[in-house]
Amino acid sequence: MPNSYIAGLGHYIPERKVTNKDLETMMETTDEWIVERTGINSRYWADLEKDSTSNMGTRAALKALENADLKPEDVDFIIFCTLSPDYNFPGGGVLVQEQLNIDTIGALDIRNQCSGFLYGISVADQFIKSGMYKTVLVIGSEIHSSGLDKTTRGRNVAVIFGDGAGAAVLRATDKPDKGILSTHLHSQGKFAEELMVIEPSSISIHRTDNIPERIYPVMNGSNVFKHAVTRFPEVIMEALNKNGYTPSDINLLIPHQANLRISQFIQKTMKLRDDQVYNNIVTYGNTTAASVPIALSEAWQKGLVKEGDLICLAAFGSGFTWASALIRW
Image (cartoon, rainbow, N blue to C red; front, side):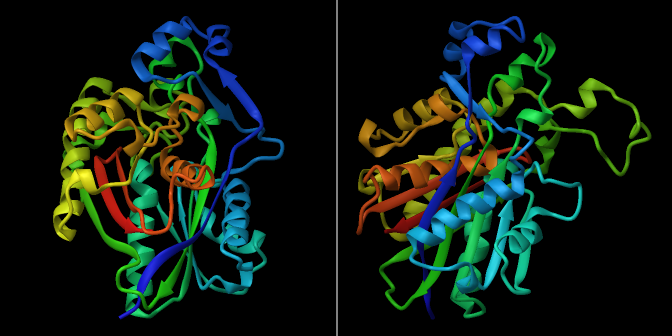
């Protein structure tokens, strides 16, 4: 049975940088308030005249393919992960297929929010291990900025999120000790309403009403934090235990960039050194399904992900859903 490995990575960040000082002109907040609660200094927001969730994903995908020394026509299947598609339907996967000018290959859309990219990696891994496909493109892309309440009323959520895209090319290999060692997926719909956007909804009688609390994200921040700091270590340890490793064996942990305070808590709980954890939320904010692939791509570009390294990816978010992947690079 073939194994799957990440052959190429790429990411795309919009040009417009929005600092905490910029947000002070939009709402009642301060740089100090934002940094203290989230660790975020800036984020990037898309230019909707030229950026869309799908074409940002395509730009990241082209970089990933270039870094894998592949062409779009080498791709057998596309997995597109987002909570902010160009359209309510169809999903972004088919748009990427068209933008890459690939023949009529399959395209799958995943709506698992912050865990979306890891769910996508897991699906791609199983496709490759089954022998169905040899080369799978997995993309995480988000435009949050157009769907945020940028007033004092919505500041608790608006200050957190940014836009961007990341992509990975997974390929088959005959080396059993290289690539995706295991993936682990979980959900708990009991807490679905702790972090959600209500509208547009197929079951609501208020579909045409412009009700701010329905069209903008709502979040019970303290409860999300409480569950995140429990589930992150659990799912990381699940991956390590499955493969006979301990936290000290990790060369680099790349968690979903939800909140710097969450990442710091995880690091402390698992007794990891600073050089074992990669964070970039300070610069990019929370880019949901794009956060793990952006961070992984950036860490790889910086030479922090090397041949033979043990890399752990982990995520937690709306749903609640959470996931991990353990990779021998």
